[in-house]
Image 1 (cartoon, rainbow, N blue to C red):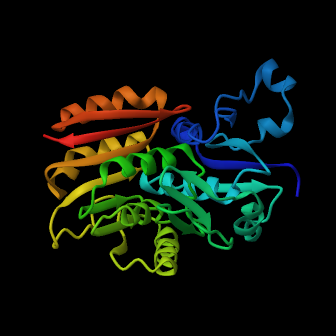
Image 2: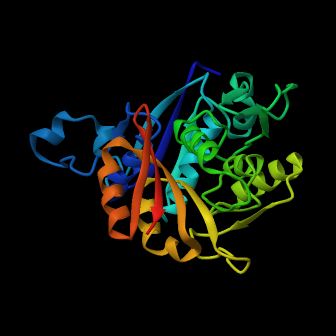
Length: 304
């Protein structure tokens, strides 16, 4: 295994801008392969490399390079979840590491992550919590959510301030189930965790079962389509997704929330923040607080 792994997402040429926008959430050093405007005749065609002339001009790719100390499996599952939520049929490829090795190769770099009163601990490590410290044992497998990404950390710190006990929580785009487990540890009475990716739901169920939490249920859902609200509306909603999906979610999510219910939206890259703020105001929510880590933003909003 080399020190770097090339991670590429291939799609139609007209989708490359959207693909790059999602991948920029992981790294700004992107390589874009777009041959749609390559000339086939004239002097330009005579001078250009033949392999480029013969390239597929209807499709292209966006690539980034993942260092060995980063979690490749988390990068891949993040992309699968985001593109799935956007309904984009793309192909994710890697060079330098076999897919069957992803879930194991990064484990040597995954250590306990203290986040305030909650510490995320790899499921395979021994760890003795301090007095008053809650721990979440996590084996994310191929699902996004280890606590290493800024978007996850921002939500977990928010949850420690807003969960007082007894709340019903809806977790949209649950990934590994880490945010539902966090809410449960902090005193939420019930958590419903949904993801569009069946693999993520399976991983979340495994983590929840291993933890012994009995107040969390999981299901496959494209955003709100299959959410069960028969037991009552939700006091808190968490959506650690991407700006485009958050904007799409805001017109409908209020119907699932209690009066004056609150929501934490995360996965927002800095340049998209104003679009999200406009959508928040347009859908009868108000911003309570914003928090930022590096280029990432999480916003606590309240139903009006």
